Image (tube, rainbow, N blue to C red; front, side, top):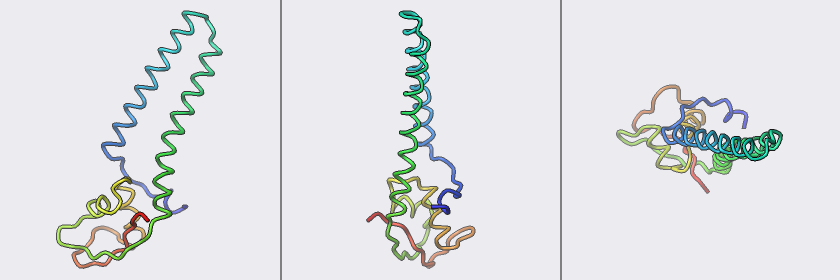
Length: 131
């Protein structure tokens, strides 16, 4: 687990979009709740409680996505794969674990196989696959 937490990877376009949409949904919902409560009752403490619940739910959902990926990685079996012509780490990552972030999977492949920069055709790699 310690090794996985220190891997640095860029977010995919899909992950960035999900975060942006979640942020705007959260903001719109919060502002709607805020103005409704203040208009109807003037109960600011209720607004704070609802805001905390919504924020915790949002962060729980985001954390559960990451935890699910770590679960897949820890339960993964490793197969020996021989690099073919025009293979890339991202392509291999998407082929073997399509439900996970390909950048994170590529970082794990690099770590497991002690790869510094790039892969070479004919090289043997240990690739994680889902059980």
